[in-house]
Length: 222
Image (cartoon, rainbow, N blue to C red; front, top):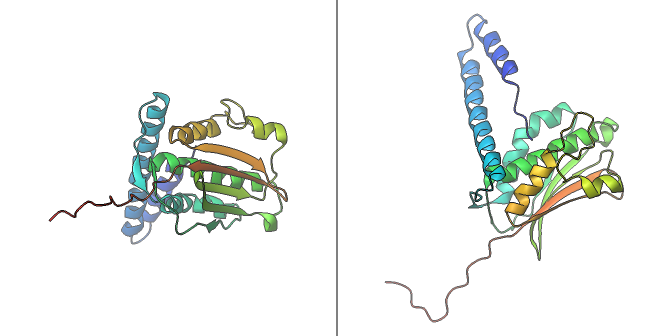
């Protein structure tokens, strides 16, 4: 799943700012605030995964999936740019809200984005491209992450979301399996497919919240 900025690196930066003459206390404060924020988020992520493993009910709330995606993209920005990629977003502005756990759904998006970045590392820099998009069809809200990387073979696409299956030399095969469990717990579906031109697309579909119809003949309360 998603990795935050290494704690040792942040602490080394803070020590370097303190060693300046005069010390840069503002930068140190920002670094410490970042550590606290990352620690809080890491705790929330572990709590959600533990609840998922224990099959506890999902903590659902009515949320704007586009906004949740933008927050996830912001968390990956440094990692994406370090690999020479400028992520693109194509978000449908009129997308209805979904009912779900913001932290869990963001973890799925983060996982898809970081996998896409890793997939594009094997192609020429000028061909590296990652697009995060949303749309709506009769099944609900669609969230897709498309990359221009090395793509998938047919056998991999059929097994990617199974536990302990991985195409990575050092992978454990749990990230995408957890993603599938999260989406299915939200009543959705997750798929992966090889693009016709290059790369692959990972996407999931979630039920949307329909607008409530006004009750006919009911008088407004006074």
